[in-house]
Length: 424
Image (tube, rainbow, N blue to C red; front, side, top):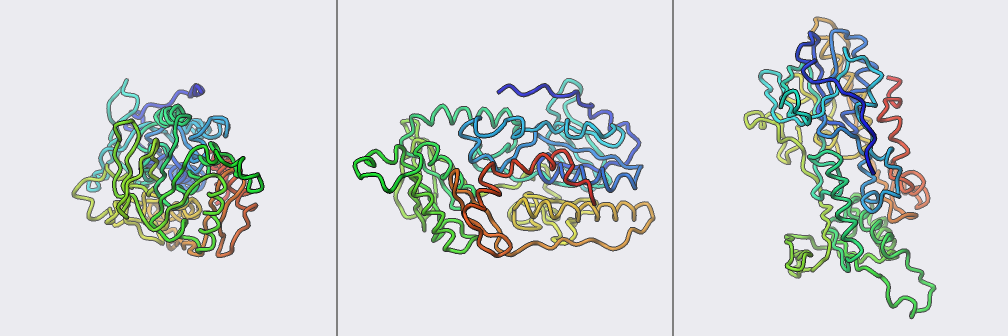
């Protein structure tokens, strides 16, 4: 599908000459876009000397949770809602208070309070360096598989990866998926139902001889899939996977994978055997997108796993004027509901700090409290799912109603446009 024309964007050189103090946000997904809207609606109106700059590697925002289904066909979701132009979502803000920069952060100098961005459009300049009063890191985390997010490239790269995968899929006879968490279960369920349909247990045995058409193996190193949920829910998910032709192998993990001579993959398991697959999809976690942090600042800014070490209550880091939210931060378990709950807290504390810099007093800190009760919704195919909310098990039909219908796409319109943040 050909992307719709994008509105003209201001060049980053405008911000270099702007006398206003800059609040720079790195990252154009849930955390970054939400923070930008919230600041523009509830913080900068009280701080007219400040301007918000949002910098993103991608010019488009993606409903990332939808990737397990979206990677299979463009027909499953309206593409104009799945991919949304970021600059267009902020077009109603005047340029003196907001600017979008399409580029990738390449260097953060915490001592000088500067961040350097490599621009996607190099017709004017290759890079721009911004001096910030406040810096919010919301660069997210990179999925191991190029099929499951924008990663370090713009949206066309993801679309190209999906197109290549779809072209190979009709000839696949065995697909191996690594990871028993939500991503692995969702990818396995979607591919299983897409390729095999749903097994009808009441059909005569002869009718089942060719089922499944494609062998799909999900490898999980936990006793059941979905280890963050109670075991009975993991076993229920495995039952739903079986009905779409997915064989679940628990208690082992993928220790190595390599391209095979025939164009497929050899996937070695920790138990000693090797699986040969036509397609291999690793759904085994993410890596925080923090490569722009200088070596000398890593000890102060980064945790051992590479995420930004963040105060879990205030969302501040050890470095003055630097904050972090989203999957790039270690403030809470990576989950969209945690990110959205943290945005108002983060922005309130940014406001307090900026007011104090001007010699004012805006009261005490606001604190984020993570929801630690069992809370996870996991669709398994097109009509089933398992999950819990606030510690209570959720029926399959409710999982479908809330998430499984379109993988949260119904929630993103107000989020990307800022309507969700109309009230403080």
